[in-house]
Image (cartoon, rainbow, N blue to C red; front, side, top):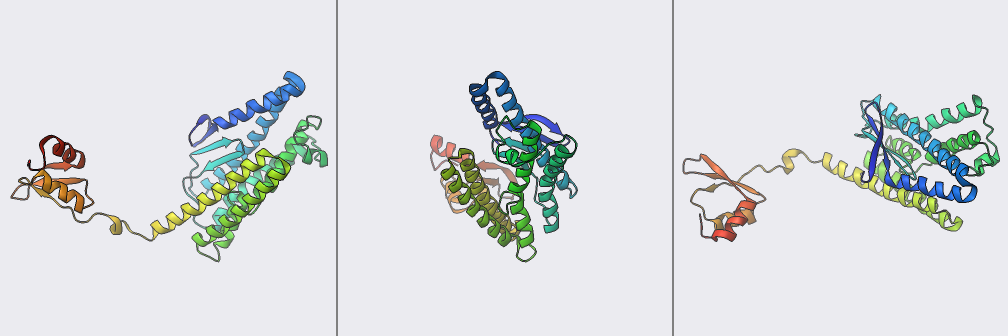
Length: 297
């Protein structure tokens, strides 16, 4: 992903941070500084940092589950709207996809339980509805964020984890492409809902989430369509099986005609005995026509 920079490596997975995430931290720091000075800015940025640490753990949960099925996760990228784990391939079996999809939210359940049980966080209505309120305890707000991460990610719409679970369940009845198309359509409708709520509530972040969800759902459906089409075609069907060669006596005009009537960009040059004497490339042909004319050999 462009404009992202590596900050950490966990096993074979590189953790990257997108430039826009740094801009988010700067914006939050400035906003909190204007309200409460340096201490408020430090607390605000620290809280967002803690939230995204939980997001990284969420994505590492996906990576750990995927590794059980021999699937590597080369990198995880942090964006202002969350994290993106880039698996080298999708799980083949629906049951495997369900396990990988649910592993992330399960990590957030464990984090929330730890914060409540071990650190004594009290997750009440204030914490769930005022996660940006510094008057609510830091640990309570962090536990609330993890609860919301679980609920949000389990929405059955691409690209959330719930959408992947939905696709896996549909794949037990339909083929993978049709299952993806249905889940992608649900994701697009969810994006419109997020966008509408964001506009009504004046929530800019939710509008950005809506745009991301719509684009991701569309891209996932298109990618699966390409993959399905590619699987139906063998290499033999698309490879060039007949190469046209040119004799050493051929003119550049004759070579140009061969270039136009074939899909080749290179032509073997052979003598009367069929022995290879060289190669004529497209760029070499163009240069020869410009410098020597079409009648030159």
